[in-house]
Image (tube, rainbow over all chains, first blue to last red; front, side, top):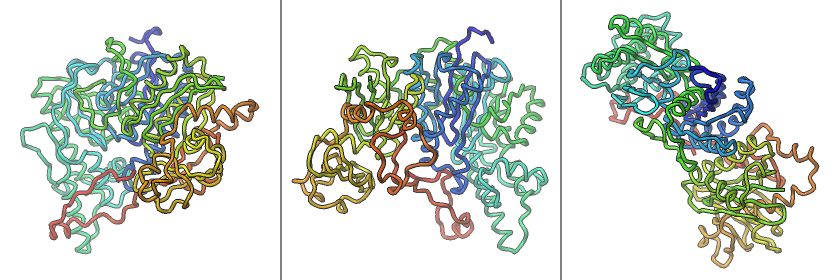
Length: 345
Length: 257
């Protein structure tokens, strides 16, 4: 599956604050270049759509050039262009979609508008080879918390559940703020938690036993804020490491529990975890533990492929080319709420 | 010379081919919400109409605004990506200059386009080729009095401005944009042409930075406003809010244009 004659796909991702450009040949990663506007957003405590859109426009051409350089390729080597058509921030998506259409038109190659979430699943094939059919995928990031049944990542992805309020990564950001840790919160909470106890405080686990495969993290976030405020009001020192560890434990407990419920319910033996929160060390450890106990094989791409990137878009594009899927028209829209049923548009 | 010109800084999505002396083909559709969908097919259409290929294009020019940002970026991103694949320079021309040029006027006038939030982007001209002031962003009633006003901003605020001052054209045309660019490109030395196309660091997000911009410049947006995001204060107190019965949630994504 790594023949020299396989097509080279350029992937473009601009659904949030990362300008991601990837180059892939079949399942082989050739380049994965990212420009992030995170530093510009940090002082606002969240991603500002207009700031992200401006940064995408400025970063796109240099990032594409840098990816081509890294892969030792020229524009004329590109056989197809894939782009995240949604879901994501509308204005940010539009910059990537406009760029991808122009690259495809300028090079005279097919365009594939793809689903951001399906791309998060497809990327694992660059690292761990073909995805077993079917697999269960748990995608967790600042914008998404979804459980998917994936019979075929190129054409058939089914939503089993998702968050009813905050995304898991969003809860990490908000709790970090309450604890005085910087944005984005995920890595800081992970680090702080290593010196705390996950069982120190019994924070609530939303929708733990409700029989659905949906998530809820808003109540947890509020519970942490209340707990911290009460300590502060009483003049006590807030045990930051214990709060971080106990909050993190509550999140990853629910995530892994429901992911394995999905595996059992659909009799699937392969679980994939992707998205920015998949970089969390405790999530990886607990998922491994529970998968081992349940006889489920766990696949987690390396952190650079878990967070938003262009390689994942190229990986899904490559899959679509291989499956003989019809390319997208040049008038496809950027769709901020593209449903997962649309793997490609 | 074969100029491919496009503009998405106003509700008009417009593309044209110009051979240095005349417009060969033009496509213009007015739809404020579908810039991203309409532009690439419009480029394909004008090429097809002339039986030309992108390989024949020698320079690409995009309207650099000012204009509402989401649509504006579509044209500039398209121009810069097309130019990279074809291996030619991409330039930006102030969209208001293109509207002014298309008017052919010989007496002083203003160009005004919709800037949303009850404001207009505007500039003052001595004649069709000469910008004297701007581009700026202001409320319609703050525009200089008496001069005729062309562009969609004039029609939109005709009551404030005075109906007798409103003139045409309403929207930019890529044909006029290409013709204006062609005038400035003719006889440009190769080194100077390369230098003009180079996008410098930094953004044009204030009126001061936009003042005195040359007609032909790099393909980068004229924003005139900074993103309007607020730096947050301390986290909201959930205990007090709960007592007062206020909503406890806040969105993770900060709103901004």
